[in-house]
Picture 1 (cartoon, helix red, strand yellow):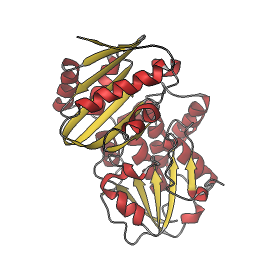
Picture 2 (tube, one colour; picture 1 turned 90 degrees about the vertical axis):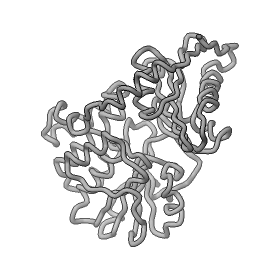
Picture 3 (cartoon, rainbow, N blue to C red; picture 1 turned 180 degrees about the vertical axis):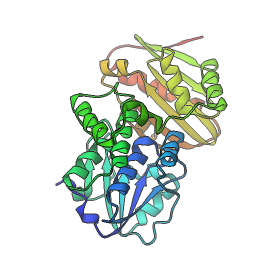
Picture 4 (tube, one colour; picture 1 turned 135 degrees about the vertical axis):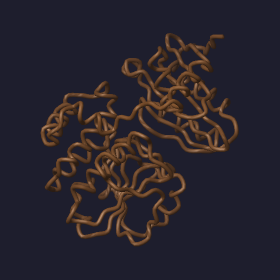
Length: 333
């Protein structure tokens, strides 16, 4: 039986744990639980390694505190949010594995073999657009009084992980309508809570990605890769906007980071999943860990060059989309 309520953590000291580099969905999930459990449990939000810019903006605008690389000592339970593989904790992985208390998990990513928590403490639904959508249902079942700002956080996770509703169904809009009504905020005000102005470095990273791009064709699909110095996720999204179907942007400087993105219309026509078909299999060829969603995922590893990693990503896409067909990879000069 899956986790049906948060009542089991009432009266306990609870660590709300996101994946490394927490995005809006991960942080908003933790924030919504943190705000809703006030007076029921003593909660602390912990983000391994670093938090992304949009999530950081959200924390600042709603004055929600969090700790980076916190100690797990003294907590009765850990609630893992928006990840289902301990490698996604980066430097805190071993601390999590050694933690003697209760472990819970709430997530919407593709299935992983690792069992991070007992089934009774797990709520994983890969059909949900975001983790906040699952948290919303769980908070309702727990019959908690959900504050207005918690409703806002839940809405923000859906907005960001659905790519502003490009990936959504009627259930998502039904939930979103209730969240906006309870948050008492129009869409423009909600989006303003996490939006940040692109700084000069981010703009340059996107432009350099376009300048350094390598373009491949597999059948009617266009795959683009690029080596960048920073902002790899933003660069990958930029290449999608200018015409690629699948993109991979990588950074290497002792540590390797690769972000992948997929055009949503292309994704709808192909039975493809970036995490399942590319970034999880990439672990067999290179040291590191991969994971994410069908249309947005990433890989973190170590090394001084990312060229071979990007080439393998293209090869894995070709293997997935060609199936039994004789589709070859053609690179455009």
